[in-house]
Image 1 (cartoon, protein in one colour):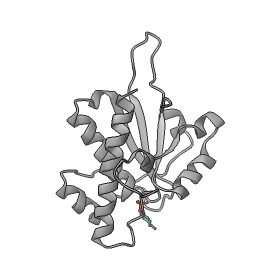
Image 2 (spheres, helix red, strand yellow):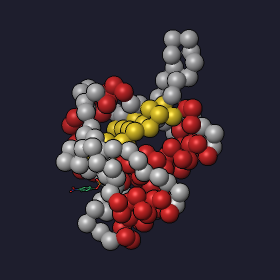
Image 3 (cartoon, helix red, strand yellow):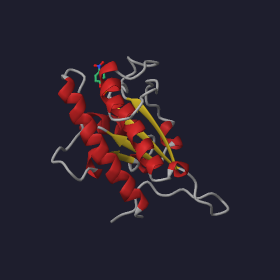
Length: 171
Ligand code: 4NP
């Protein structure tokens, strides 16, 4: 298995935090939920000190907004309190983060085009590739769906975030 999101080490050799950015379109449904789910799963394993997580969107129309109320309600029922504010992804995020995790192909392709260098393109991943209990090949946009769409997204995100954390911790 290849090394992913290389573990950064400072000049004295101490391992630094891994910095993960979750990205969707609006940054009000999928990626804020992914951010909080990953944060909670790391905390449950006593690993908060190792990870810095954030989220952003490839479309800035909801900048400054809290996550969508439907997603907040569904997430709250599972114990996740979504309080982040939407923001647009920026090219300097490629300097700040070690891994940039896209929810679907459109986000993935947009991020690859935004990456300032070829090395930066290698920081872009599809979050679904870390899921272990599904045949889905992307995290579907729930914005125009009913409540079941939001529940499906949360199921996929819990699966993928667990898989991502296990993968990072097994390296
Ligand atoms: P997200 O969902 O990308 O998971 O945050 C969406 C949010 C807003 C819109 C589309 C998708 N929108 O068209 O405004």
